[in-house]
Every structure is written in C-alpha cells, then in structure tokens.
Image 1: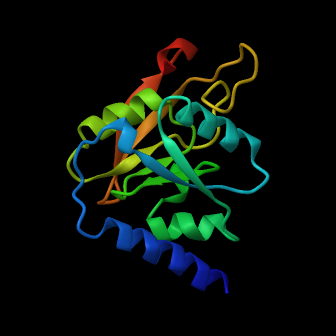
Image 2: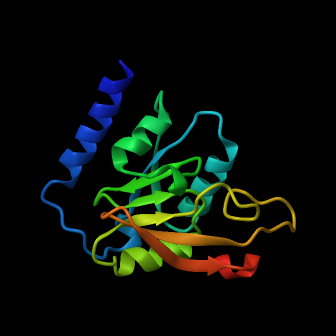
Length: 160
C-alpha cells in the first residue's frame, strides 16, 4: 500500500512537470510541495519562513518519507527532515534559507537537482534556539549524483 501511495505522489508530480521547462520564475508562481512527518515542528517553522517570504506550500505527510526521498533521488548524506519540490521538479531538502532558494530559482545551474542542508543545524530557518547557531553548508545537488558547496553559512545574519 505504501509503495502505491508513493508511486501515486510521484506520478502526480511527473504529470505536473510534463511540458514545463526549468526556467527562472517569479516568486509569486512558486509552489512548494513539502513532504514531512506529521509531528515535525521544525518543518512547520521552515514552511512559515518560506510562506512569509511569498512562497506557497502544499503539505503532505507520507507514510514513509524516506521512501519518498529515495524515489526523488536524494542520497542519504543529503537528507534532512523535510523535502520540498517545485512544480518544475527542483528539490529543496532541509532548512535552507529562502534567499538561497530565490537565488537558485533565479538562475538554476545546468544539471542541478536542487539544494540541500543535510541534518538539522541549530539556528537555521525553523531550527531557531535563542542565540545559538551552528555554521553549515548549503549543497548544490546534481542530477549526476554529485554535489558541491553552493554557500557556506558561518553566521546567523548571513541567512537573511
């Protein structure tokens, strides 16, 4: 049953992607399909961060979120607690600050699958804990299975 539900989600995504090109778009047009555990509060914080900046989110609670990530091609080392997918098929994994998603969408790199912030770094959008902050990298993940550093966030203020 779980496999059928995941396949249905992915088939719907593929249908939405058919005939669309991966080009820059207005933030007014950006809809994020966000896959998360029903109980994850930090995911809700990230969704609020994105929606407050003009994005629109459709939230899904799959029975097996790891299976969804696998079907999308996300390697285990790229994973976090939630996965957002645009209608063009770009994947944004984890607590990525909006400004970097906007930068990516303005000019998607050739061969890019999306961006990822592996794990759950303290102080990132949705992971705020007072003044605490853990530096982290935002990875550019590529369709060929490789990745490189898209941005290094060394200070809380670099996120905005």
